[in-house]
Amino acid sequence: MNLPADYLKSILFESQRYKSLGDKTFIQLNESDIHWKYESSGNSIAVVVKHLSGNMLSRWTNFLTEDGEKIWRNRDSEFEASYKTKKEMLTAWETGWNCFFKAIQQVNSENFENKIKIRNEPHTLIEALNRQLAHYSYHVGQIVLIGKTIKGKSWVSLSIPKGQSEAYNKSKFKG
Image (cartoon, rainbow, N blue to C red; front, side, top):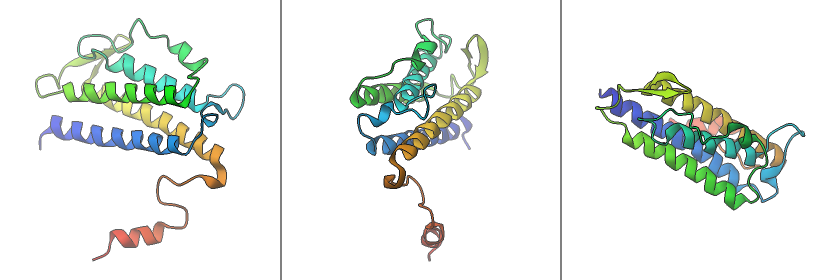
């Protein structure tokens, strides 16, 4: 077992899986859907994406040498007026995830034991990656729930549809 390589492979797989859930949600949404809010103080999908992208860019830009909370980040503004178009939102979504994936590719056996800082608190890479994977999956879950709420009965399930578990399991345990 090669802990750094196996761990990073697992983080990459899970991160791509969560990104995929967001991607599949966005496909089902139109331009106005990304701005829908359950109530006035809630966050739209566009706002959640703005926050995720801001977080990813701050945490993973120069993460081996700089604190993950960059001085140029304005976290509070991430929850204010968001992207005007779906295209703009999707560009930010891709930019954030690409920054994160590029950062993972920089980790190797020589720097795996390095401490990195987030808000001046030292973290092992495992702690930082676990923290961020939990944060990203939390917000992707919000995106999916908002998308499902908007689409209602026209929502296309991103996992095993209700009532299909037995058939799915049978297909997995065949032969």
